[in-house]
Image (cartoon, rainbow, N blue to C red; front, side, top):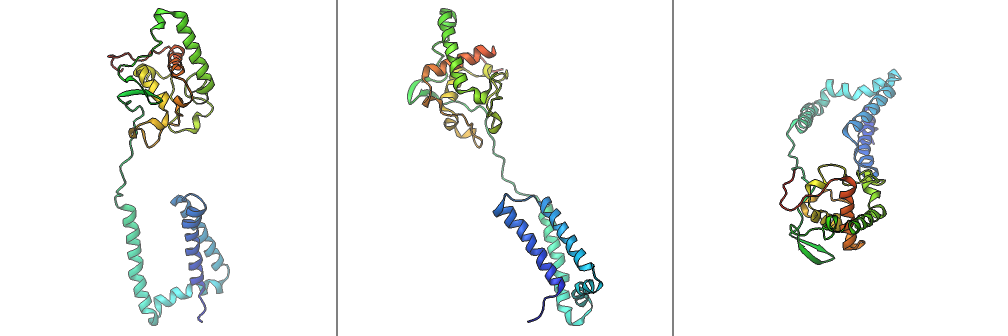
Length: 259
């Protein structure tokens, strides 16, 4: 059996290490490695091989021997011809793959605040048309201030028992768990949130949570739970009153245009 030349051994080592980096470390063991990282490691491997073969003159001559034979020996003319055709074709293919326009799929678009359904429901009970349902306790703000205050305080209790972990102590979306979610929890201190939506919209979003969002809200669905499984209908309306009272922003009323 013919003994492998030093050049062939070094070439095999280089190719095996490239396959190891590209498909094992960057596919089986971990997430795919960036091309720049693989190139950096391959450069270090190539440098180590060159240092190894050039330490001794005899070893370096043995390393170069197959190259000299291929270029100068008439008996290796076929090998030389194949390499002179193959190498430019490989380089041409690599250059074309890098320079050609990639047919990337269209980016997935997400609607941050999707439109609610036509009917507002709570635990499969139909409350009414979404565009017509009003907070049943909002009128107490004028008719019975003490009763209204009691509902706001109940909403405060509900919020700080259930919601502040994500939406924050100050309703600014900076809760303990906020930075672990994409998209992040809503910032109710943002003047573009509460004033732009009706209370029925907030009831729908709170009661149905992330699982109740329509397809337009994907691919990064909200992490909010389905609160109708844990809160009463009154508690949801009360927490909406609290959000408005705490921030000072009033929800849109029916017929009012969004700013």
